[in-house]
Amino acid sequence: MSLTSTRLAAPPLPGSVPVASGGPRVRQQARDAVALMAFSAASSVGVAGGLLLLAQLGR
Image (cartoon, rainbow, N blue to C red; front, side, top):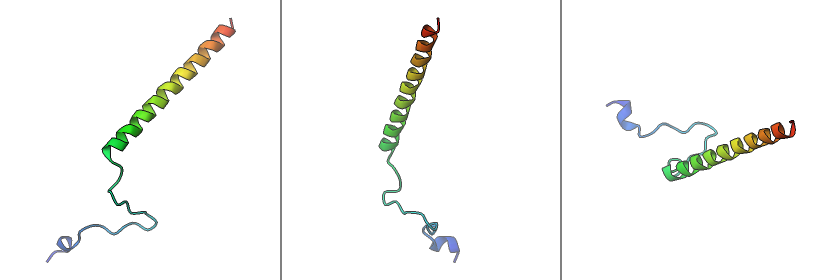
């Protein structure tokens, strides 16, 4: 009898918290990705607008 057939899963690592659902769902990950892209786009537009304003004021 092999050892791998009697093992169902590896033991949890010390200090880790077991997740009942197996991790975040794909829909939640997609929502997080969209939020990150929206934040990134808004930040880029804000920085570009600030630089444009500084360039106009420097003339």
